[in-house]
Length: 322
View (cartoon, rainbow, N blue to C red):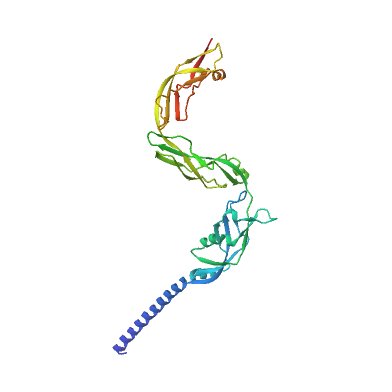
């Protein structure tokens, strides 16, 4: 074969390879574009719900399939056709007020699909855009659960800035929570704890919300509670005063050892009164009830401005004298 024909043949083969590759790439790009377009289709899903129905388990799965019409891209439509015999499940959270008891069937509740359209759309937002619900209602069977109400225990460490202090305990609202579960699981639970609340260098009253610690196998009626606390600037003073005796009958006297007490007291900055003098007493009736003769002295003139105080020594020894 002449040389010029051989070269021409090689060039022709090369052009064909380039054309073939171009056709393949064009088809691939067209396929990607076509698959990204929206197509009308219908789908069906099993629906799993989470809810906080009083006295019932938190989760259930629909007894019926949810059939919908809408748009999905080519990938989604193709995948659904390939998995035609496989029913997938979507999980949604439903407000308990949307459930309606089914008359004559204990533990069974019905929900209108039009009431959960938003939740379903969010669950399928990256796959499918529902346009019409062929299924008008779904029913769910919820297993009944035992329940009891227990207090909420706040776990916290709040440290205040110098010259500031907490003037009340941390309060939570609500201060108790209903728990659901098997009788043997919830019978020993005396309180539900919050997650650890840590604040430092606090110089003002505050509030917020904190999560409750989950308990395995137990459902909590609420997962978060609100908390609040009050903080005030204080003034601290010290006074040494005589310990007096109160309620001693006529002819009876108590000798208190030692006869003086040191009182360290704190008042709000606004309510500070330099003329205030603590009064400390021991009660004769406390002495009579005591076996050891030792009595804890009390501050009897603590006003509203007084935040806290400490008395030392505690206790004191009392001796009866005629």
